Length: 192
Image 1 (cartoon, rainbow, N blue to C red):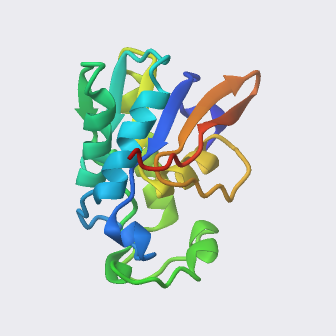
Image 2 (cartoon, rainbow, N blue to C red; image 1 turned 120 degrees about the vertical axis):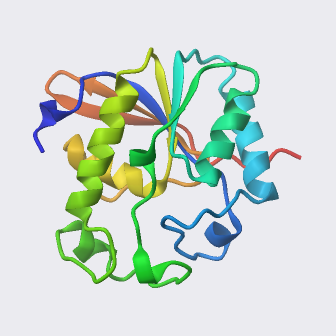
C-alpha cells in the first residue's frame, strides 16, 4: 500500500502487557488470553511513566489483554475508549498455543499457511482499523499487539523486523515524505 494510504497523523502505540502465554513463548492470535499479574503491573508502571503525555482518545484491540492494558492506562485520564475489531492480532489458526515461529519471515514476505490469516489480509485489516483510530479526536493512543507493529512497518514503509516488548510505548510520526518511529518507553518492568 502506498505511504499516503494512512492519514499523516502522528500517534502513540503501546503493545499490551504480559500474559502467561507471552511468558512461555506461546502464540496467542485471536485467543483471548488475559494479562497476568506482571502484565497488570507493567501497565500501571507505564501509566506512571506516561503522566506527562496528553491524549484525546484511546483506540484499542477488543482482545482482553489489550483492552485491560488500555483500561489501566486510562484510569487517571478518563478518555473515551474505542475498541476496534480490526486492531486484533493476526489469526494464527492452528498455531494458537504453540511456540512454532519459524514461518514468520516467509509469512510476512507473502507466503500463506493453511488456517492462518495471510499477511496481506492482516495488513488490509490493520489499515482499516488504523484509519478508524486516526479519525478519532487526537492525539491518539493505540493499544494493540506486536503483530500490529509488523503491519504498520509495511503500511508506513518502515524498516522491517521490529519486535517490541510488552508495554513498549512507540511514537509514530510523519517526517516529510516518510514515517519515523521513536521508542519512548521500552517494555517497562512491573511496579512492586
